[in-house]
Length: 139
Image (spheres, helix red, strand yellow):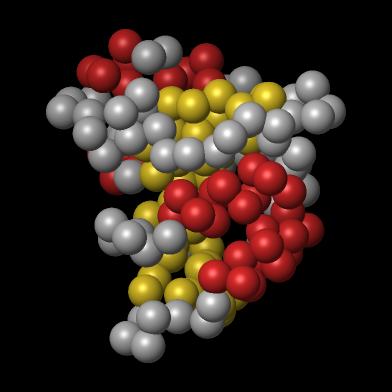
């Protein structure tokens, strides 16, 4: 699969989310890599909205995981592992139940738990360019 998008404005994020779901049209685990402030949460929020999330989508930085219900009855899982201190915390939340649930799973700061990611995880990189634009691509 190929996904390589360049956005120059926040107004383009909705279109980016639609293109993302055209390419990735079935549930999977998606690991989003990027520096603090790169826009990972904003992109995930737009994707969740396109999937029909009826809950307010926000970064789960303190909760580690947020669960969103969709109009279709489906569930989306959104993780933020930035604040975990060790990999055992991922075991404590029962990561396997989520990663292997056959639901969309979006992960921020996956580098903290890389050894636990399923083999078929889709790794997405969000790069901030010098002009403020973003490149979003599979790595």
